[in-house]
Length: 158
Image (cartoon, rainbow, N blue to C red; front, side, top):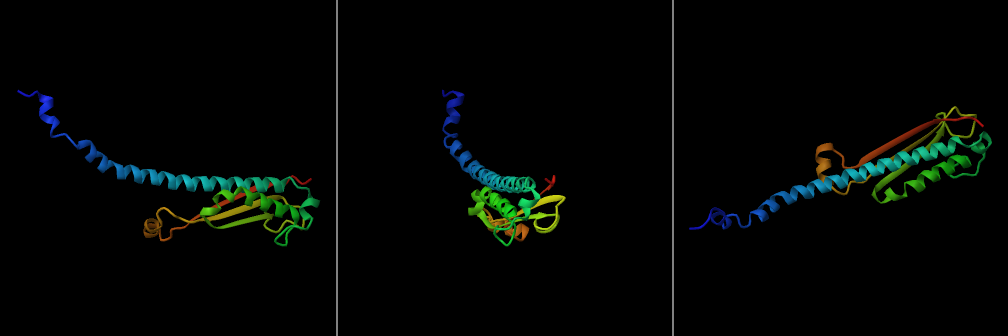
């Protein structure tokens, strides 16, 4: 007479393969979602740090340095260098970005007239969605992701 485990051994053959076939698509979907959100959070962290570093650099400049011309985009040199600092920090997310806007301002205007009370840098990044463009467009109406970061630092006025 066959023992109890031997009776069920033949009927349980292949059950692990069936379980894996059922569970593996769920694991792949969860892994894809984790990579998707990790990339979004990484890009947001880079955007936040770029805005903070550019604003901090701009707040350390003297009034004469802020007004000195010679930068790009018809702006003073120090705001142009602050823009360059933010651009260099955002170079890692350029392959996924459709557009990057960096706007350094002093008291809601260009940094070239009077002594500012605050220095503000706004960074906007439009990320292209490569993983689930159709699914996200179906539910949200747009498959692109827009990240915005604004940092305001008081100007000490040296």
